[in-house]
Amino acid sequence: MLRRIARAVLRLIRWRLDGELPPHPKMVIIAAPHTSNWDFPLAMVVAPALGVRIRWLGKHTLFRKPYAWFFRMLGGIPVNRGKAAGIIGQSVAAFDANDELVLVITPEGTRSKREYWKSGFYRIATAAEVPIVLVGVDGEQKTIRIGPDFLPSGDVKQDMDRVRAFIGGNQGIKPDRIGPIRLRDEK
Image (cartoon, rainbow, N blue to C red; front, side, top):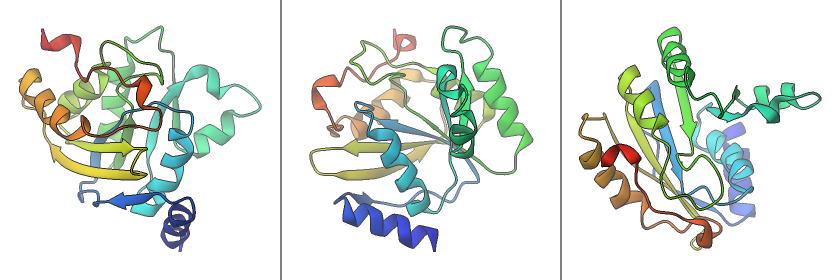
């Protein structure tokens, strides 16, 4: 029922889904480009439309009273971005402790244009030995594209070439905020 309602909401706001998630019980989804505050509400409709319960990492400041309960209910996990150490270990521990876990990460780490993506999604998927699923947000076409999935090979440049090939064609909601698709680790 929730899936039908979410799909109806997407039709109502004139967004569409292109593709289906692979049937993995555990995965890291990277959704990009992340350029607008509207990306979050859109994700909250897309997840049930795809029939999946997602978890996501959010700035710890979102999880203050009186809203903390609400963001946790929506699948939020608070992280202090100023203290990056430990986030990867905590995420891997969460994968180990759960039979099913779908973690959505926006690799830019912010809605602003950045020179590099944050590599946490890659490190988490590698350490947890779970696939990365690519999801593109195209504001111009009002389409959420579910792309291929892959297990990180350890060859960061080769894996990021796969990411660039799929995500690169998506415009985001605010295209002027899109930065290059690259990790510092590629150097």
